[in-house]
Length: 160
Ligand code: SF4
Image (cartoon, rainbow, N blue to C red; front, side):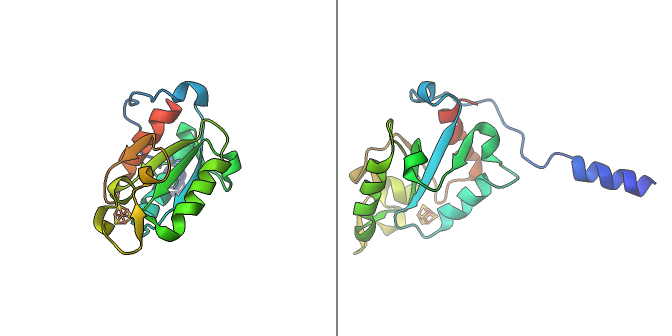
């Protein structure tokens, strides 16, 4: 009996991390109405940033509870979530993906590579940072950024 009660309590207890006080919203948050649909683009990442994005949308950090969702098409997206330095091969696809989004076409550059090419700066395959190809609204520093920092950045858009 006690073991069964304990098992039931264990199954029901909270999994996700508690959220701290919400950070200050960005100006675009007014039009987003607490919802942020994100199209992720890997422009040349080592996949370290993708592992942290996976964590952010997993059960522990659970970004959907603050209104952020990953979507499969730029046509359905409010913002691009771009990782990695932009390689020569990905510069045109990144720009086309940006142009396929409806207004207001927000862009979040996630990780040091997206911000300034990071450890790949000067590489033969690197065309530049994300802001060299499309306008960037918010940068998230780190190599890779911690899920807490990614979640805090997304909360600035959803204002939740
Ligand atoms: S910022 Fe770091 S983890 Fe992210 S793509 Fe660059 S090297 Fe990889």
